[in-house]
Length: 112
Length: 108
Image 1 (cartoon, rainbow over the protein chains, first blue to last red):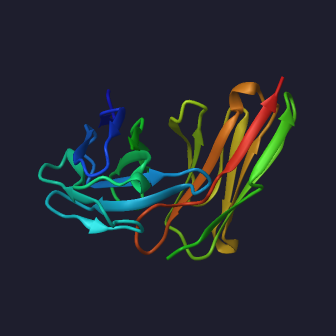
Image 2: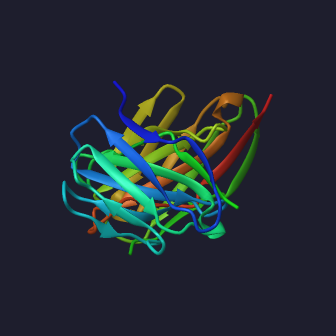
Image 3: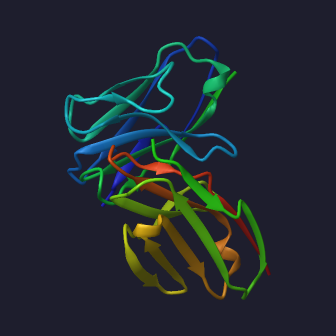
């Protein structure tokens, strides 16, 4: 009964490096989301997906790319990391946009 | 997009006190959730409550969709209630938008 699982939990990158964050859900949800959380800002939406093979931009998409090749997985990529991308990243999923969303445990990313 | 405002931004209580947290939103919603982010950063689902009233132990929530607000009540607070409480709503876009949260500290 894993729910939403994020990999990795912690990562330190050097400026200019690339990485991929993986989100996996086992609830057969259609909708998946990536958020970032910065101090005092709440959670802001980066990208989202309403089904396998679809992606869309959220509030703060610049510097990130996503892919949803399989229904259960939603990948967030940073092609050239910048210190401004230091944040905690959360993935979530839901059956539809009007149903309860469930969150992963978060990934703490530091870019130096 | 839909705007979400939470109040108060910060709250400090003594153990045993009651509190009310408020979430105002700017448009009609089809989804409203309350979350608790514990000191370890984990987001815990408290209520899925687009309308009506629900209770779970010492916590209860009420959403008055026609007046565009929701309230979270915490009774007999405990130190383990400390953390940040978030309200998230979705409207026509069906994408959850978060408020900035209420930071709660409960002292023993």
